[in-house]
Amino acid sequence: MKHINKMVGAGVLALALTVTGCSAGGGGGNKATVDSSKGASDTAALPTTAWTVADYADVKDGGTLTLAIDQLPDNWNTLQVDGNVTAGAEIMDPTLGGPVRTTIDGGWEVNPDYATEVKLTSEDPQVVDVKLNPKAVWEDGTPITYKDYAATFKANDGSNADYQIVGDNVFKDIESVTKGDTDFDFKITFKNKNADWSSILGSSTASRATAAVLPEAVAADVTAFNEGYKSKPLPSSGPFKVSNVDTAGQVVTLTPNDKWWGEKPKLEKIIMKVVSRDGLAQAYANKELDAFRIGTNKNNYDTAKKRTDGTVQQSGGLTWNHVTLNGSKGPLADVKVRQAVARAIDRDTISASRLSPIGAPVSSQNSYIYMPGQKGYADNATSVIGYDTAKSEELLKEAGYTKAADGTYEKDGAKLELTYTLDANNPVSEQIFKQIQANLKVVGITLKNETVPEDKFFSDYVLKSNFDMTGFAWSGTPYPVASTESIFYPADAGQNFTGITDDKLGDLWAAANAELDPEKRIALANEIDKAIFAYTPVIPLTPTPNTFGVTNGLVNYGAAQFQSVDWTAVGFKS
Image (tube, rainbow, N blue to C red):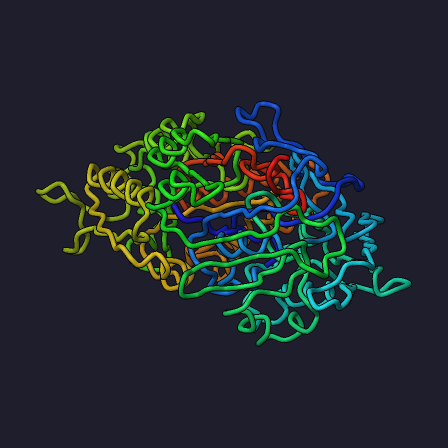
């Protein structure tokens, strides 16, 4: 299944939904004093990080890392809505960084390559002081200053609708950015409290990356922000830079950034090449790839296990498969029909079919906000959309449908027929569609498929809400409350492809985002979760662990739930 980033401030598929870690540099730094998402649950069945860890000194110099991507980005600016896809984040991750990075437990720490201090200095009003590392520069050698951050925050705060942002979460709560004693010190003052404030400073995970900062010239120019990077990468602010884009061969080459001021990257080169989903496992088996994301595909898993010089890694994940419903038109505009569809789908069986073959713990995703094993997770789904075919048919009747002689439901002489849009050459999407189709047939709903080119699936269908039903995977962040907002609220948010919302969510999210007490925030988040299930715009299916096939000897890269990838230390064991 395809992934899209969840952006908090701007994605998988906020910071809102993609897939990889963003951040580079050495360790150390100050822990967050306020971070409601910090700390994975002790009951998680899988480790949060499963990759092979090696000290920087134990990684050999040189070598090429070859990885697969789904597509070349539609936009290389990961803060622009068309750039909010997994492939773009995976490519750009080694070129990005920011003042904070995510730790193994889902908390955050200061990234010393980008800042010497990031500190919450006042809670009322909320004020954050940032001291940048004056050695940090753009790819052309220009210093990265407070002006770049101020312009980036402004571009994403939603005040100018011409900016095609992924979401304005956190950014919209900023009152001002003021210069300190130098261009490398600044103060962020918030007009509304926001507990996820650190998310806009570059905190990222092994499954998601977005630009923490854009050059002022880009962020301050609407045209440059929206269109300037449709065919070229953003300037690097990390240890690697994109040195070549072969559009014909669908290959991106990254090499060390000669302006990088931190520890020298161990790898000589990173190759990212487009490989079709159905060709991934064989490419890995043929040793054309050093690592690949297995997902929940049994063939991928079995093939990866057979590679004698490789291993399978599995950690907890932040990704969940789902069915998104377009509630803005047709039969699905009726909440009773949406819930009838949801009640008809045997989510537990779908989850078992996805997870059992890859040796993962079986569970369905029963929250829109938290992942199983994450602090705050509660089952708010079963009471509203739990599998119940009798209830499904009851809801259809309440919506004015009657059962015809052939067992199908109809209204005003029209059969209840829906269309499911899926991307070509995606066996996981195909299997899920067939399971849902069979489920809906039992309750008298006809589901047809519309298979579209995989490189047009997001740009022409998902992002334009050009579907009745569709499915992909949201890939989240350690900031699950704020990062989820733009998927559901407001109706025209950059990631809300359902076309609908519940207006009370605005006040609920404002309260949750402003709540600095972790336990109270969890309670508010679950109120939000229940409110979303009440109108059922999305049917969550399966929480997906991070499962990777990894070549023996590759270190500091692979399966991890939260931890940022340190691209200077990725490489092969000496």
